[in-house]
Image (cartoon, rainbow, N blue to C red; front, side, top):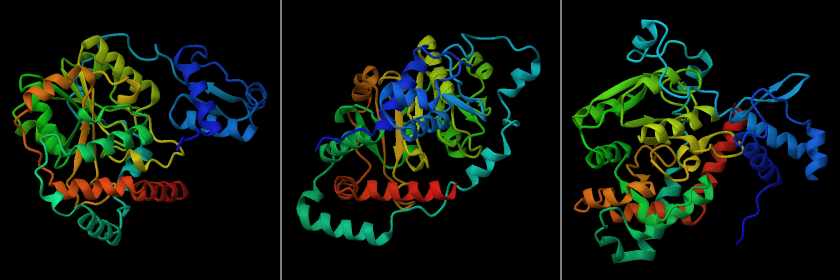
Length: 370
């Protein structure tokens, strides 16, 4: 069945594209809600919802009694490496960021709320899968995962994240940490990896255990600080753009575009760790860096540990077109570490709509709370 896009989402995308393309320049005032409503033939409430989404993502900022002003510019970040004015900036690259707002840290503390799928739902789906698929569940999974599960995931990320990917580019693994190790296997241990500072301890631990060198890049209010990013001599950048733990920092729209500009100019790889952003309280899912990149140089990683439950050790990554052949070559003898029955259970949770209904319930609850 064809899905019709909400009017406010269509308007949001038109205004966002005008901002990114430079039609509306940084610090300029957007037309009033009434003028936009008249121009596009929509209600003022529709414009209000669209502007709220743009503000949530950092494209615009509301100014009381004055209106909405553009907060994004392709030139709002550094155009290349910039020498620090003093040694303090350079020292910042290898110590925890100390200028993060109290609000961000407080938000991060609530990230492990009990928002898991209920056990009864999971048990019911397990019984259903056993009844439907029977002995088919005893078949060995191909190295990248079953075709059944990967096709469902391809449809899901397109539906929920606007990421158009072929299922061949999806790789299933037993947890995000396992997928990090596969990425190292493919990209090589000679590559230097940049990670956020502070970041989730396991990220640095996994890379260290794989024998690769990491550089810690200081986080600011909107993501990795530009000076640290452009000065870092790294071939891969591991980012958690949504509510990075433990800082609670979410990358702004400008910062996401800066990451992509950095990647293009440095010919470097971005590893986007999208843990938890599906639970964003926003009415619209968070924009992924993978989506903004049009599928080039960005490896997208996500897990069901948060969205279904801590007992689930299932994650997946989406490989960009330009890296698929090397992944297929380097991992051709790998065995999928997720049992076939578990792939079918999660697949049926998604296919039945039960998974997305659960996601929407949690998002509504968080909107009410935040």
